[in-house]
Length: 156
Image (cartoon, rainbow, N blue to C red; front, side):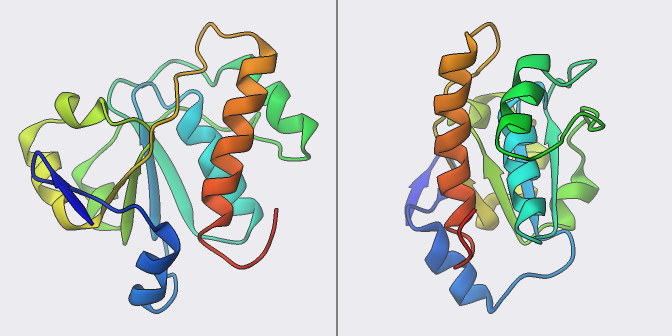
């Protein structure tokens, strides 16, 4: 476990869940900036595995990235009905684990939200797919898929 700017970053996601003794309702919260790409991908894969998950953004977009929707359809996961949501304190309170999809999010979080998630944060470092070609989005998607799969023994 690494401590960085008051947020806790765990390098072994699987061991975190083992210590928690299983998942509970709304236990995973995936956070990115616009909630239009990375966090939507993660939420889609988590739900596909039967995990309780939600996603949100610090500055939500008006829509999910269409290329991300296409990339997810390629692997049989439909997120076309998803809508970007604003990150709230209630979402953080309802989560057992908060996953930031990019370390740069730490700096953009308001202090009250950062304090709420202090002991249940995992930080991933995935590039933002916004404006990237589908080939790069597929690479990011596959990396997120592997990280989400580490939360369970079931392969995606």
